[in-house]
Length: 578
Ligand code: ATP
Ligand code: MG
Image 1 (cartoon, rainbow, N blue to C red):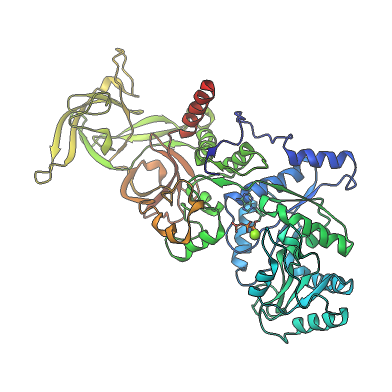
Image 2 (image 1 turned 135 degrees about the vertical axis):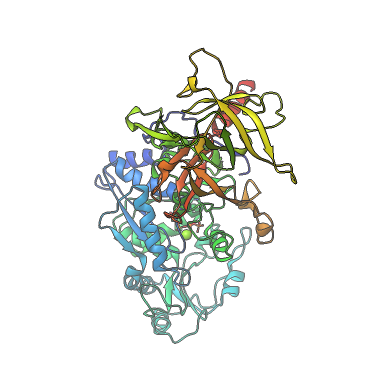
């Protein structure tokens, strides 16, 4: 699992889904044999115990995508059987995120907790069939009795209780006569099964916790395994698609449905998404939020859909990513550079390009008339002429990027330096004639330049070449902004390997850099929260919800450097060598 791989060799930019993955093949085969009367009906079953993350996006694209591809239906079902960690806030956020991703469950919104009464009746049915019993072992004892992968388990002393006694005890469990954990209801299967899940698994536990939808109606709650398949069955699901860790639970899924003698969907497992430099386990995500290390579930550094959205990701880019990684049967780690690549592909064609100076350095153009302002023409996106042009003001004082000037430049530095001429994008050629420094610190505080009036628009009729093109903004017109730059939350490339102890030690102390007093072009006045722009040369940015008329705030979604292309080239070279 440590090796970072690219799950697919598919290179096209098309949005079309593959019809050849093993799940779609299985669905096609079931359609051919008319196994489910020609129906395709899937579901996405999140537990409302956190915000959805990019791994869930993979599952959503599979569940809803397959239903779409075969003209079927996909339900949204909240798997809310664990009252201690679930909440309405999580339900609402999950719904918002699925809609944002572009999927619609219409009126098919279900809750496992709405089936509690029916599940109770199912449990009674199994007791009556002699297939379930009330067990007095506590959690530790159950674990001890279960045995190991190499040793069979030992039967519970309560395994042979009579049906009558079991019915009575189970009813009293529900009535609240026993304390938490004092008794459980267990399926009577096989304590010697090589599959540990089949060694008399717990069906119900006693837990006095208020359920966010059921209140205090219940003090016993069904286990996931005793819930999920029955819910699928009740809803008429045909293909119950889930991640690989449920593979060993499939025999139990089937066993319950067999013994209950109810309609049986087909469970099919696919590999979970693992992403380099990213943690996708809700246990850890909760900890990041609760420890205050991030500002919330939608902090742009979080791998949640709301975090990606706030950072500037589009639903199209995430869906494209999910299509590209495809549906595989074996676990691996996908390089986050692929996700970034998908975002660049999308924003390249749709984000307007503007100029913003992140770390400003003042430039005074000595031979430009004081008080004069010109409106220069700038295209909004050279990839798409229909996005039009805008006017940008030019004046005697401008800002350029501090790193675009060097007093003593090394070879191959083509930007501004004393005596050197460069192009200002959409404007003029300028030449640096003087450098002003702070006497105490020696820091460059301001540059003096001259401009060539014959180079309006940023090119010269005499064909004279300049190597560097800089972005800039007019100082009296520019708007001040805060710009937030992000780095990975973890320094470890595969943080999924982290243990409790080194989790904190591996947090990247520099994952957020908030630049104050950035200067952005005046056309960004009133830019709306959630809008993406390309800031020329520095990346794709998105207006943060913290942004206001007083102070614009931008998040960098991604830089312009395409590391994915580089990875692919090196992979191709590697293959060439083999
Ligand atoms: P976590 O371990 O992050 O809490 P989970 O599996 O408990 O995840 P659920 O809310 O139960 O989260 O997941 C809903 C659905 O999303 C399940 O069908 C699960 O298989 C799928 N899913 C969760 N994480 C991933 C992932 N990383 N890649 C693909 N599918 C995932
Ligand atoms: Mg789960």
